[in-house]
Image (cartoon, rainbow, N blue to C red; front, side):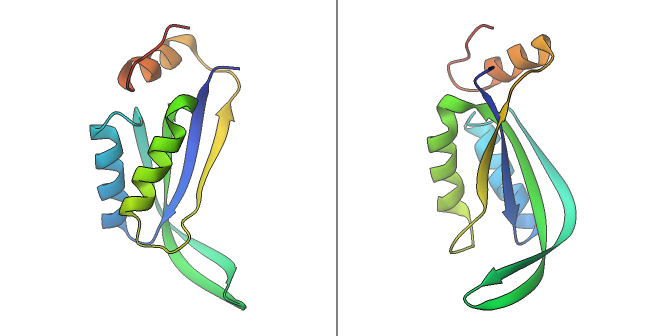
Length: 110
């Protein structure tokens, strides 16, 4: 295990996705943010099936930063119940993992 995560976040607008991405990168809570073009999401919400356009953020960070990253995203997010989920990076290109560690707060060696 690498101690690194992909954090998947859905956001209701391009502007919102960029605002969150710039904040968490600037604060070194994540090393990189990928903002994907709009996707169509279909989901249950308050007893109804809903459908809407969302942008996806994929953030790369260290597991040790997840709680702080999650709080920061929630503070900035427009949704009542935002999707913020972490997926472990079980293996990766060592130079990339070293870069990820170095670009986030208190980088560690691998």
